[in-house]
Image 1 (cartoon, rainbow, N blue to C red):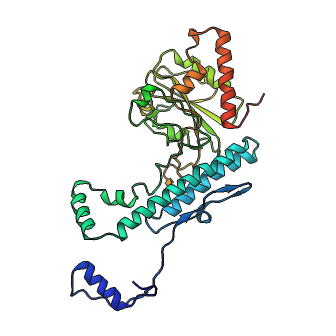
Image 2 (cartoon, rainbow, N blue to C red):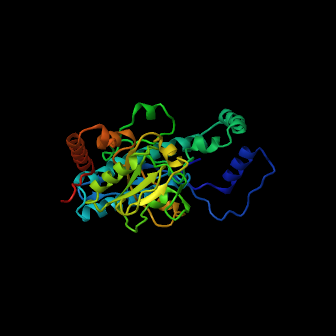
Length: 352
């Protein structure tokens, strides 16, 4: 097509060619216009005290409306960082990580959209024939080719975020679908203290009404003697009011007073443990908590959380939950070192 607004006759000819129907007739057009689709993203999303979010940092192709959802990701991930920084709870690395996470994700999304657009718009009869055959074997082949499998972008992950510190053991590496630091947290059915069926997500996304902070899931790893040691570990973070602990237990419940007020979730069927591949492995998993208080509001990604410090046995090794296996002095020294690492990674020191 020439670089001008098309005429009805030109559109008519194209319609007949595409449909193969010479009797097809178009008439009374309301609007005929042409445009050149542009796309791209800023090479960086932060510079000093200036941050980019939404359309200020990217131009997206009209495929799936992903530019809007990407913008929501921007403002949510920037908002909790600003809240922590303005509240005096974060070092510069927390704000700096916004650029590392979102600039990289926008570059990936831009490439995905450009590739999908070319595959959809600029394809010939051979490709069409192959797609027709493939569609009979793979029902969602269209979304795969266009790159629109995850329009809500709930599968976005940040494996290279400066805030990650993942320690995945060999057993986890040999398993499939094991979450790594930077991934979206999995979910599973558990039972709350009132005997109601619920999920950990309801205790991760601002369940206490705060718009920022961390949720610390403490799993007993299906070890009968792990509960008291988890409680001891949670007591160590009590000075950090931005860390909200939740105990996930496969064994007997722990009295609320002993748990320091932490929410207690029963995982008798070990579904939550299986989701994190933590059977036989007591662990602490620290997560970013963002979103709204309504679980149906997917645009603000109430369920888009990701492990912040670590997942699985790395934390277990740091805190050395099997206290009876080491002398008390060694146990305290290992615990002190663990929280020093924690403070360095999070950029926040515990208050005395």
